[in-house]
Image (cartoon, rainbow, N blue to C red):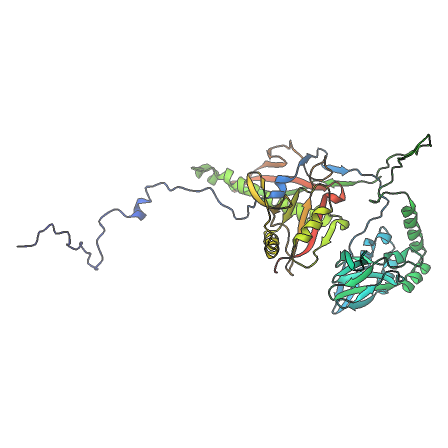
Length: 473
């Protein structure tokens, strides 16, 4: 029997070069007649921006927000900065004004003389710097390292009361008190570099500098004023009395120069060619997409500034008394508990995603499983019922450390508030305007995109910072 011409096993026709001949329209050619399905332009820079979502925003009509507070007699304190020349560490003279007793002292010659008299010492791990009851032998500045304040417990053991890290100081009572003594044991927990200004050098400088003597006398006078434990001017109240005693007369005094927060601005000029806007607006409006991504970038910059700006950012404006270091490096549950317990009604924790992962590892080591909290339809990791929100704007230092923020929000709660001004000309979003600037000779349209914002901390305990958080172990 002969083979059928319809045999399905017959090989396909081939071209002269041996390749199979095309028998249907190719997909590459078909795409020329088809309309592709497109996504809107995507952008990796967009993050969750939780800080902008959780802050209550206060209308700042005058462009500035004044935080009125009760008069505070405590001069205030800060952290001292240093510089090094090889292995030699020196304190920056003007940074001595961060010490409470020297705040506001402007005689730079005296400050330089004090800075020159500091002696550098290296304290080994476990070495005792001072013991309770011993005379204070000088002003100590911690250049690098960590020291622990210990107290004798009721059962004969020693308990840790406080930790001090780079930039902290102790023994400052030697500047103003006569024959002061140490009230705690001071022990180095790691190898620590300290700068010491001996009491003899302090007495010599004070004797030679009338301006310093006058400044310290003024400081003592301010300390003698009646104040509560927060340093605020006291309100005299009688309680628990019987009969008809004469009641105290009082008033609430205010700060004469309260802090003002001025609105900051983030701006850019968006440029779009008229040919693009005229001819390439389908299926998506080019101008809208350009503006959408520009606004996203501005909001990212806004959140970054609200955390890191030296003038008003949260990291740089948290009170020194509300900054605590980790006890062992990584963020442990104990560290988080201490951060939370130092403030009234904590609402949110903000941390870099790597810090959140490090905290999770520490919980796993202890067999703990953090709970979750629902926020805006999202299930967020939480500790003690307080949501831990990711924020990649919190920096990680070169040594692999970062910070964790804990805050209370709202004016009614004396917390942290965001500042903006609505009702701007050509407003696109609250606090953000888009103004048409015209078309140049190259037929390019320009739009000025501006975002006005700031953030204010109403009382110090509204914001706390857990510092020196190690994320690598």
